[in-house]
Image (cartoon, rainbow, N blue to C red; front, side):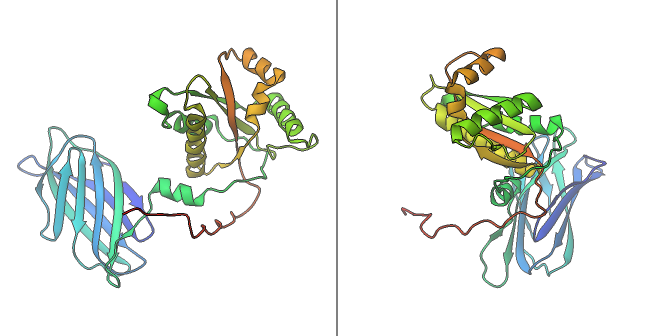
Length: 294
């Protein structure tokens, strides 16, 4: 990555890495730029993923370096003040020009209590930020974004890797409204729109022949919810897919799509853009959520 910075910006430490060419011995030089905000710290650490396996030739004296294949973990044991800026150079050897493919696990240790303060990565940020949205604009998200969300579902874990679920993306207005009417009837409120105006409905079904089908489908739903949050697409899990696709009308819909098999509806994920300006804060977590057996 000789002409492009790879950068991760987090709450207390911004880390970017750029190539700095090759030295006379053929070693690859990189510069890591650390910009610190929020609190003082006396130890900073982060990891860098490269496109190929690497080994460390040289790092500064206040740096600890640990390599595992294409992953380099760096720990800097030196004071950084709030609004501080440090550039760290490293030299690596590799069979070919290594490119930076990712930066991960950024951590600061503050002076005041000497306990690590982990910086949340994109997955954990999405987990904490996601909310169930129940009011949508009619604007349609781009197809490639919807496909990206579906891909996240396709990579969900499944029992024995059997991939029992399937995902149906509904953007056709007539079909979307038909499913909404079916769902509303099942719910007992035939004049309502259980999809809250959302223009996209992703339906997850799973093959009941697989003993883990319900869990497999639920994991697909969870993956897609978090991917949608990361991509700034509002979403909500809507139930009653089971009843919809057990009905004659639902079975006919599957047949019309060329889908055969013993599938059960797991859930609908509605997607779109929120009408609200700001999300509500998350509810406090209950006190007795965690138990440790140590």
